[in-house]
Length: 87
Image 1 (cartoon, rainbow, N blue to C red):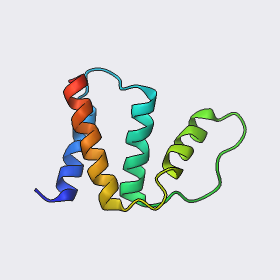
Image 2 (image 1 turned 120 degrees about the horizontal axis):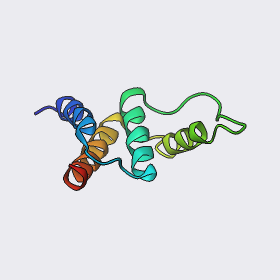
Image 3 (image 1 turned 180 degrees about the vertical axis):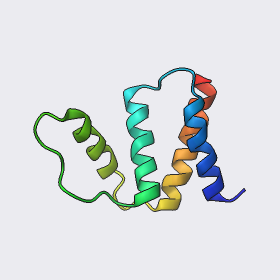
Image 4 (image 1 turned 180 degrees about the horizontal axis):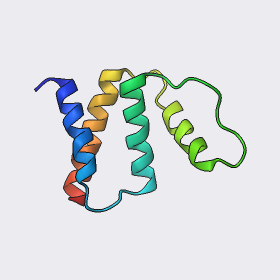
């Protein structure tokens, strides 16, 4: 199976989890997904009291420079672990 197909399948499996992953796991999934689909983060870091947006931005920023392919592979690996633990 091609990497894009594996990634798409992993994204679909994320909707099948029977328990909610931890906040850290959710941030990792979010950041890896964004890096895989959009590349490096752009724009200004959110300010003020929007802590959720700040955390998401920071998690994505940590992946700056990671290739889309590597982000897809890392997302698939994390989703496989979560699927085994939470399904």
